[in-house]
Each structure stands twice: as structure tokens, then as C-alpha cells.
Length: 435
Ligand SMILES: [Zn+2]
View 1 (tube, rainbow, N blue to C red):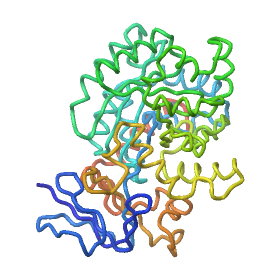
View 2 (view 1 turned 60 degrees about the vertical axis):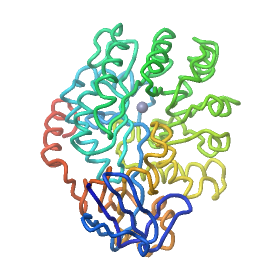
View 3 (view 1 turned 90 degrees about the vertical axis):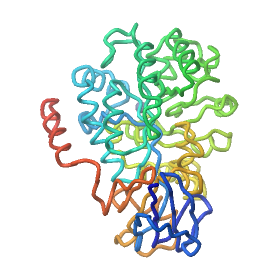
């Protein structure tokens, strides 16, 4: 039995659960104890991870990402969504994305995420066999959603094959490892026909997996949907009878009156991406209002091409601040609530509730030790507030996924990051961006 004990520092295990001296013990990847250090068992065989001068916290959950897009980080910035997407991203993806590129770039994405405290990623993209291999070898937990779109896409040159490709992907990976799950990503209501959306709903119901879609991201998408479908993107899915089968809607910046309640009734979770949405000038999902309506809300970085990094703590800080900007109320989305978006909220988006997002008995041992000795984190009166308003992913010292240490003193143990970066720079030089 693989045993691990994380001890020696304060423990913030989830909202309202803080111990100045805490400990987390796990056997075979599952937490058997989380609480005050003086009550912790001392398994004789345990590997001990020392948290002196640090803070023990749950690993972060990135609810929506396109990991391979790290290759296009900074390639085209300061553009509106439709120009950025149609004139830069879709052509770059058509030219450069294949299985090998996705594997290489998802190694870099995994390195960036693990080193900044993310232990679970939801990745929606194409050529995801490469992503599955990359994430598995990096040791990050991953929920992978094979892309479906009505035009030729990487790995799916004929859109007529998109559902068959998604089926093959889910069947190939769904039982591969306890750290991987597989589902389907219908790109959006403006790139997927009614027949495609119905096909995705039917396929995911048959396979018992989740589906995600981009929904209500921009004002332009809303206008086009009203012109084309006579109603908003959310109302359109409801009209088709598909909203109740949708698991997670990504973005939800431009919801119309009553649609937050509708999403709550249909039990659709929302993955909000404040960094990407604000940078593209799209707006931002109103997390406090969604939460008040009863919607489960997670946070995603989106791809590094629109963010431009995968540091989820930055999203947490942004979510907390944007909520206050919007309401002019400093109490809107307080620190623990903001942090929980990147924990239990993300878990809800990825079908991992009760598995990740907390350091509690029975949960997977996905944990992070933040270094509290950094100048920017000194002194510390309140752990949660520090994580939201003062820390960055650069303050991560140790990371454990499923009871296995993958980051030690800021060094990734599962890959040669320098070699991966060198290969990505080589490829980027061909793409034409700065290498
Ligand atoms: Zn996205």
C-alpha cells in the first residue's frame, strides 16, 4: 500500500475548514485523515511530505482548457473573439494541430498547471489521444472532451466522422486509468448543427459520459443566434430539448433574463473563464448571480492563446475582483467562495464531485503545499484571503496527485520540462510567433 503523510504546516482543507497545524494522510491515493496534526495517524511506511513554512490546500481544478493551445500563446492578442478565432486560431489549428503536436503541447500545459497548483484539468480539444498520453505521463488528473464541430477539424478531416471519432475516443480512454475520464465537447451552437447537437446528446447518454459546450460567450454570438435561431443560444438548446442533457456550459457571459434559473433547473454546471473573457473583451460570467440561482460554477483558464497562461489562481483572483467591480460591493464573492469555484465548482463541471476539490476523508489525495515564506505572502493572517488576493501559482512548493508527489520544491518530477520547452520553441519558430 502506498502511504503518504503531508504535515508540518497549516491546513486549509476547504471553506470553513482550517487548522493552524494540520496533516493529511492517504493510502493508495485516497485520503484517510485530514485535520489537526496532533490527531494524525503515523503510518510507519508513509512517505512524509514536509510543509514547514507552507500551507496545505486542495489541488486546483481547471474546469475548461484547451491545453495544446499553449503553442499559440501570444500569437494574436488584443482582438475581438470572432476575428481572433476566424482569422488566427482556426487557420493556425488547421495548419499545426495533429496528434504529435497535441501530445507535446499538452506536456507543456501539464507542466505549467502542475507547477502552479492545478491537479485536475478539463481539456476540450481535438486529437486528444495525444493529450491523454501527455497528461497520463505527467501525472495530472484529466477529464478529456473530444471536439465535435461541423467543419474539417484536426484529426477529423470529414465532419461526417465527428461522432464516430468521439465515440472511439471515449471508448478508448474511459476506463484506462483512475486519473482519466473521457467525454465529448460540442464546440458551440454556432459551429454545430441541430443534428450534430442531437447526435452528441444521444452519444453521451448512450456512453454514460459528460458533454461540454461553449455557450453565450459573446454579444456577437447572442445576436447571431437570435437572427439564425430566433432566440439566445441557451434558449435554443432548451427549445431543442437538449439543455437537460448538457452537463457543462462554458462561458455563459451573455445569459438572458431567466436563463440562470433555467440552467439551475436543468442542472447544467457553468465553467466561467474570466481571464479569457475579459481579455477578448467579451465580458464575464456573473458568478455570484449564477451561484444565487443555484448553478454550480467552476473556473477555467480556457486556452493559453486567449489567457495567456494556465495559472488558475489568477482566475480565482480575477473572479473575486470582477464580482466586486460589477456589484460595487466588496463583500461580493468573498475569498473562500471565490477559491471554492476552482475546487468543488470545477469538480461539478467535470463529474468529479466527492472525488476532488476538498481535503477530506474519502476524497482523492490531490494536494498542494504553498510556500508562505515568499515576501508577497508575508505575514499571513488568513490563508484563504492570501490564496485569492496575494498568491500566484509561482508560490507552489509541492504538489501531490492521487497520493503521488509530482512536484517537489518547485521541480516537476514527471518530465524533463526544459526538453519539452525546447521542442515547443522549435515548433513555435515554424508557426511564426516569437520563439
Ligand atoms: Zn474554450
